[in-house]
Length: 329
Figure 1 (cartoon, rainbow, N blue to C red):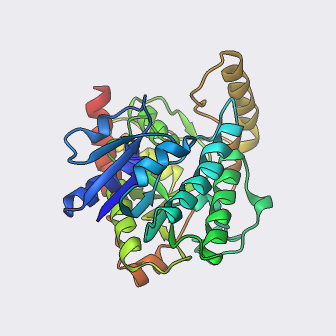
Figure 2 (figure 1 turned 135 degrees about the vertical axis):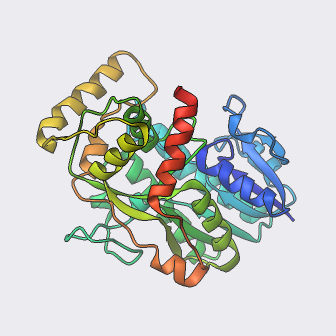
């Protein structure tokens, strides 16, 4: 059985690909023509050059495949062209899954995000059943992933595609070359360039544990259901403090009120537009709006139904910081 992995040059997609190859599966990797392929070094897998916008390339990549892990996404909390997020995350997902159904793919794991889930008013860990609405999605990334998940669920209800949905929390670990928004924060913290923090929290999880969760979802997940793949909850102050400890720096002690940082985020985005920058600013309006509540989540369902397990968050952070230090010197 050939398995197709999209987003395979990315941080999480490459981890999923490595886990599949390690298990002895025949793996095909969808990669854009100009993508950075450092994460594919030494990986024994077939490469299919294509793009979610190019239906013909998707048809070719899906040929002969009986399994699909759709990990690819445009993961940016700011973009000079917000429509690009919807083209990739929404339209690209629907196009791929419909073509997968036509190709006879027997089972799909779709990578969503905890960004699509509700938050608890008391700040406690949310789960798959926590109430949520489209109106609560702050920013284009969240809205695009929310709409994409809804379309996947609709296709499942219409018996168009046999998909299981996974919702990774804040993924960290070695190999975050691009890097992700959280990876950028850790990188700057390693360099001692995060002098202050806002009061928020994240659920940190190692990339390899999330990859293993994808395989468990394929094997044991219920069609149409979603599973949070997370680790442990930590405040941003704790994350920055532990990072500082690991590199022998003093942790930031200045807590900034969100209302004071928001104008800085607007200014940073305006400056990025003026420079015609494609990379997002370190501080974004969407990121600050998301930080209004702590992004804490429970993986209890995945643990119970899939046998999912994640290593301690501090271990994941240690491995991340060690890798970042290797890269930045």
